[in-house]
Image (tube, rainbow over all chains, first blue to last red; front, side):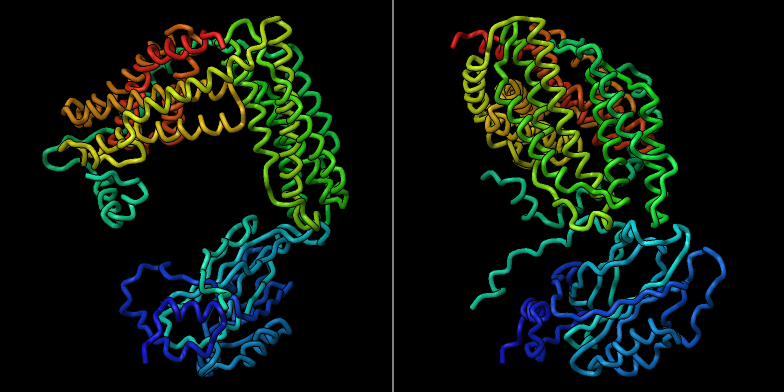
Length: 206
Length: 433
């Protein structure tokens, strides 16, 4: 059997052709590609997002969640993790809030250990702003999510100096145990539309 | 060696280019090289007077034009209460800050020559529009229909002013220089009216985008009105001849001249210094000088083509003239490098000397006749010098002598061709039909 090329594997991921992934076992550790090379947009993913108005932590990879503060300081809740197995999920502690339960349920409903993986992200956000997911990409080293910050609508009642907490769970249609890492970026503005993809003649071909 | 395009060349050498760039960024104070005092260079350049450039543009700003802008800007800003408040506290803060900043601007006078002050007041009117419309959107009063109507109106106004330009002036040179300014204003307005993000579907979720959209079209309208004002004041004052078809013919002739001149140096345009037959071609100052001279021909070609496509005859004449200068300057740079006459040593003294030579060469260039045309052709060199000055004012400690010196050298090479090119263009403008 001819092994599928890395490009074919990535195209399969981007196109959601999960079955084609069986032969995709390139080794990111030995890749001589520079970071950013071969990055492909993932289009077949599911996402859940939540917002806690009290600035409370949603999850942590240890056992102790950060304690909420009674000030307008930025709460220390920033976390992101990539779960590829049930063991990974067991290492995550979710808070006892409805928003955290939403993320936990989403992760629990993911077919880890084989077919799917899930990325969790949480950060503090000003009460008058919101975090939006712009796009998700994957390269040989792993998936990455690009977020942006935007002001909430003008008619949304909020205090400029207050903080809240927001969280995302992104379900990928592929196992992630071959990846060496994951990443996230947050733009300070959502003004620019997502970066257009280059033309790929194999995409949508009969 | 066959000529490689710059793009192909960069692709071909790939990592090698990065390596070279990295080397040039290394400190140059090796065992054999004296350490260069960047601060001393920056200080010396900033202390030196900018070149003296005579005011030669025949357009004058009509009395009352600036006051008109100031009054209109204030009337616009008065629609926004200083203590405004909307439910979103962050938007309230930002709008209050913007309003306060614009109010301070409107209470201050603008600096510079009359046309620069007029431009500053156009920008200030645009700023006031931005705040007003963003506030309206935040208050739930975004006027989508009004925006669409105003867009159509400004676009029609701009087209009407452009179509009515007959280039009336006392002589072809005055028509060229004066109406190039009018064309430039209308072109800027056209760009503002170009494709942009649609008016937000939910204005209250994008109040600052609403402000930006309104600012673009209203500023285009203000620029169109100023283009008409400047033209009317010029035409009323001169009672001259309509030079439209004359300039159209001259711009065609000069375009041919530029193409023929550029053909002489075609292998060096859009190329790297490696095409040169010279050992020094790999040294940073040589590479930078060559790239400056080569790119200049590229840019002028693009600008001249765009002006001709827009039927901006006056701008096309000037851009072709600048192209002649750039092409001849490139020819001379190639000869200078290949004959080994270009000095590649970079010291505090050579950089300061290069700057002094650039100032002097520009002043000689703008002294050529007809002077308005000489200034127009020399403007790219003048702008390089003012750009160098502005960068040093902003960050005097960030100077790259091995780049700055060839940049100044390129100004000298360009400026020295301006007098002859000015005479050439003036002769073509003087030709009947």
